[in-house]
Image (cartoon, rainbow over all chains, first blue to last red; front, side, top):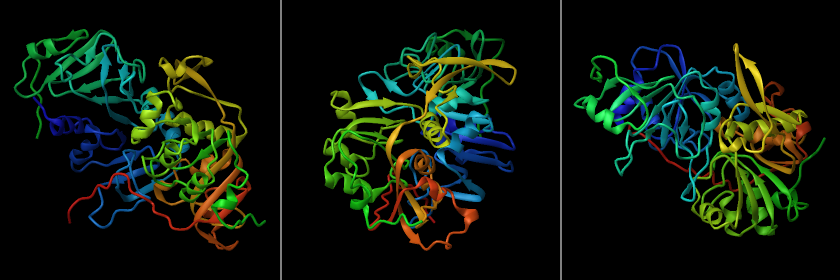
Length: 218
Length: 235
């Protein structure tokens, strides 16, 4: 089974040379730490930055320089600032190659819910609805089951939707899955996790073809 | 042109009860601190505020929530404010949550003189309820878009890094965020700046918001520029 860092490491392997990538809050933010060496990747922060760098050194925090999670950050050489309209302009016009975000639920048709629990949690969708409506490629980092052991990979989302038929790939503590027209397709198992465990933890349609390899993580 | 005024109190002197105000900023970054303080001091009530976030409990728009000056918030993300969540769940505060890109683009549409724009954000979700939609061909595929209306705001209050007496503005780093498009969208736009300079001192090539959009400008004071999430690494 993977921990949060493991999920981040596995997702990082999906990032290719030349990609512009938008990272959501939570596990997706960790992905930045594990981008393969030797490739050129530019991180987009939807509050208005291309070329996000690591956290600043202590004492060098700049209150005018934050990421979408409101964390203090730095820029890398070659970065650019812009306003929020342009930021979502580049998202909407599909210049961003990959969006990585978290989810509370994903359905086997690619629907995603991650912004609201009616009557309980009202935080808002932020940029998530714009991102999922337009992204070329969306990878979701999430827990396969909730704290009560119930699947979060469902036949149909129960929570209010963020977007429809948009998720392409999911990486959980148990597995890597593609979203296909026939449902979730199991691609890889997390170290030490059996196909049976994944079956039991998946509420939506699950396609298993042949031997499912164990994922390789450095 | 000389749009210079003395301070925040003068800038907001004609903001009365029950008006709609846009406030620039993302989180606590690039928010018009001086004008928010002045609005709290003046005690205007029944405000509709359009702003990406609602501040935190004791800073930013959170200060106006505490004093119950806000009737309605139009925002994309309000997760950092417990008082906000309490007022929302108890029904004291009216809230319209909209996608961040839609928020930005509805400001932009107002500033560009376009009554509406089409966006795919929110299609198939509760954001789409009651909205007109239509299909467009995108990259060879039919795709649904929602019609979103330009905002109609009585006042826009923005914060810039530098400005001149013509109202030309330059923003700094990610404190730019919603400020330029809100500056374009207000019937009356108020800009508070960290440094007010003489005409000619801003490089025209570097101006982000041309002064035509700005009606009042003043140099703010005592900026706290609070950091919401201080994240650092060790040397």
